[in-house]
Length: 442
Image 1 (tube, one colour):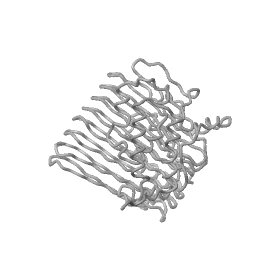
Image 2: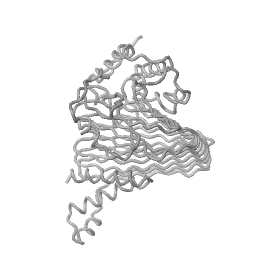
Image 3: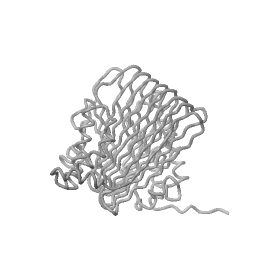
Image 4: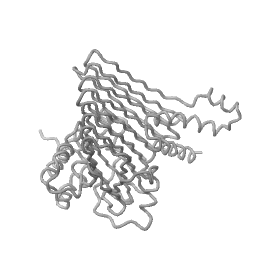
């Protein structure tokens, strides 16, 4: 007996839009195959929903009721619109290299691509016919991509994004800035696909910002990063999408022997956001730190779901998330640590903490450990609570007004997530971002 699949309006629109998208965006054979693979995967699974364990708190099928298909090229936004949105980035002026994407398309005029020996900065849409092996071996090929329906959807419709490659042994001294700006407020899907490859012994810092104006749009950003032996990647991402937007992001990372990852995400915008992080150690001696903070109000919803896979021995991972929730906002943290059978001497710790500023805010945490080796050190912890009244009393007894005392304690709570960022300038700008949120909340 054949059973017809009941598709939602959003799913049907995306599936129907694929043939026309392919015709309008020709691609080399290898990239066309990636798109077809992504499309097949998405067509088979559809949008994730609450009957899937990993999505039980973020029912995307229910939240995406419209037809959010990739929009055709939009006209140039009005004077100053892009600049006003770019000014929301806390990293303005701190990078010598910058790739700007406006409504999903590379903006050469607003980008800055200095010529540095050993550093490749380009965008996907301008790939040469013969793409380099490091790119074809990475895009769509790392741990986890396309196993997830959102990444599969991104693959099906991928057309542009940042491509960063650092040659062996090169340390890029100043951060590379990647900015996605959405000015098109019509219901549509804005897609970005970034690829970062660091060869052996290289080092790079990427600061990534997603900003948007008013409108009911969906931003779908996927970043794949391959960190070579003894290389070091620091990535700091800030999400300040429009108030009605949905932000979906995937980060897929593989670390070689002795490689280091420092990853941080700050989520403040969007009515609904979902950040997924998939990390896999491919060589011994790897070191990964994944941290983040959400600061939410009204009915905002933010979900971080991460999987760290210790597939080889002698690697270290740390995860720390600090979540501030006001009004009727909802924070979700799901973190899974996997230690495979031969990954002895793994050292993994995971923490998530929610601070509830109202009685109607909600924080759900689901830490998981899957350990198949016996000589490891692994642990996790999750807490949720309100501001400590004892500390409030202590501050107010010293003449600090109640509102100021509350802000000081919230700032201190969030600050702990920033402490792992080694660049002083980036850390101070993130502190300023948190202070701005607190001032707006009053």
